[in-house]
Image (tube, rainbow over all chains, first blue to last red; front, side):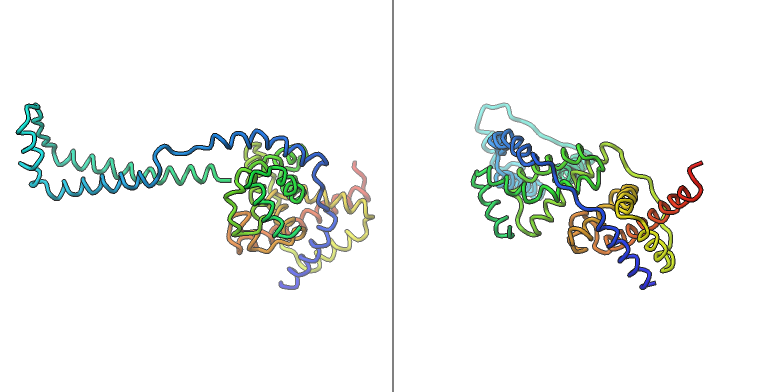
Length: 131
Length: 195
């Protein structure tokens, strides 16, 4: 078996010497270089995000922090500083949001789903656009 | 040109010296052109894909971190580009069944090849290689011409090194089968005519 494989390798090695690689056309380099000029100028308009990644991270951390604080300190918000402050003003800000638990879990689920999808989509597009 | 020179060209290109890139193209154009040609089997298309490969290499050069050899990295881009074109053209080749080969059968193929004159031999081998599926043709080229290791081949094709080994083995067998069939047909024509 091993002898067969060795012989097969030797035969193919011999056969492959007859399939010599071909040279690229003579004007190949100049054609590539001619196409590089438009590429070079378009590099000026490279995409740069308006809000840097670090800012998004800070916003995310703040948002999660505030949401967590509200969730675990629901009672503390009742009659808290905001309401005390608002009581002293004439603004008609008397909102009292009493959503059902189902709505709460639905919104939470939606946010979680969105969070997961962002990473999946990012991964998908990165792979697609990779060389 | 040594790898150090590759590095200096990369640096020069990064510093805005576009003309330095011409040296890189000159150095690797045959390699890229042959990858495309082996997969596409069409000179004009291969040239187009090879040019496109060098445009991509230029755009991505700043992201090359030197984790692999520059040639391997360029090879990989050329391979992916050619595959994309193949998919676009839907030009996948027919599948030739692989036979089990014994030493005796291999000797027969070898002897029959020896009896052919050089020009016939070259034509027959080129025709047989053209009948191989694209990926098999390419692994044979990478292994026997470019002297790439299984690991480097695995990196280019993006599969495990063991899978490359299997692919290489199957490619050898397939080529031997095609050679045998082609020579049997030629033998029939020589002795019994076309009618």
